[in-house]
Length: 268
Image 1: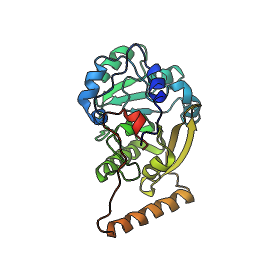
Image 2: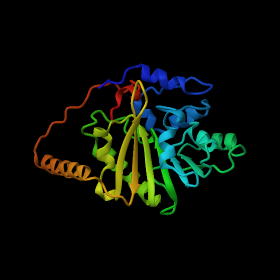
Image 3: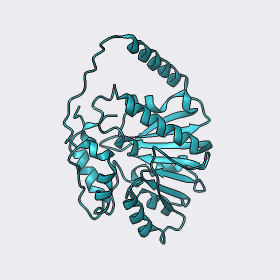
């Protein structure tokens, strides 16, 4: 389903700094560390979807300047630098690419002494439980889904991967901590992953952007899902159980070529 117009890619490219965005040959390359290591060895800065200015008013409502913040899949985004300039001084930036972590550490450690840069795989985080007040990701979870062809029927493997990440996020959050996810994924595609009673958190959604909406989800640990979210979760569970009993169920996948940029092709 190629329902994202091409200008979105153009608008995104305009926001990066001192380089031309290098697109991979295939969307699935976005899941490979080697692609990112190579790209980060050449690229100085790039912000996916939107820059900090577009949604900082939302972050300032949800984050206190004294909060201990973990950023997942930081890449070479300028977001944490801008957050630091706005008074958020306790930020841990993580990425699984040692290339980008080394580059960003060399660039920022003297200018922003309160920030740290650590190599960390979101599929296997090693932080102690209840370490952070806020966990923030922008586009990182989207990169885990780029190979999926049907947003209504994602693979069991991807579903388990997302659940694994969210379980770890919940573990490292403090008792009333917040997980903030910034994405272009619409609620009917993304909320089924977030709005689950097993995570013991509430889900709030907002959006920002003028010509195109980006979505901003806040999950607060220890808060309960709304009655509506619980009802929808129960409906999804019942439907899944029903589908498991059907024989020879055919899934009709959406058509798009793997070499089309995932910003245009993914709707998860």
